[in-house]
Length: 73
Image 1: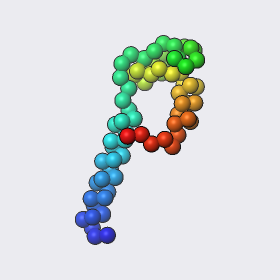
Image 2: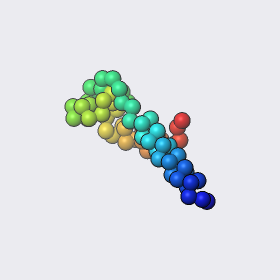
Image 3: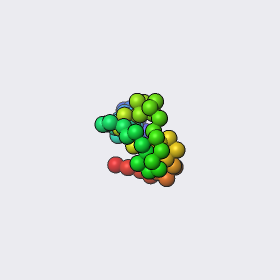
Image 4: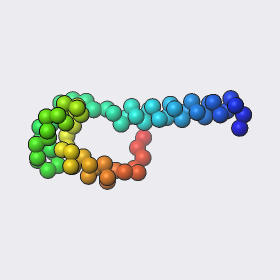
């Protein structure tokens, strides 16, 4: 691979990575006070840190495990 093709590949990889991060960090709106999965209270610190959260920490961890390896977009 010549140097220019390598630079283009690196640039494309960087753009893809930045786009994936931007898609993942799209928290909007008001956080729920109770988890929509189990009904437990969502701690105030989590609601502040993760705008628009709808799951408690435990349910979010379960959802993340279920979605591990699932490609989106």
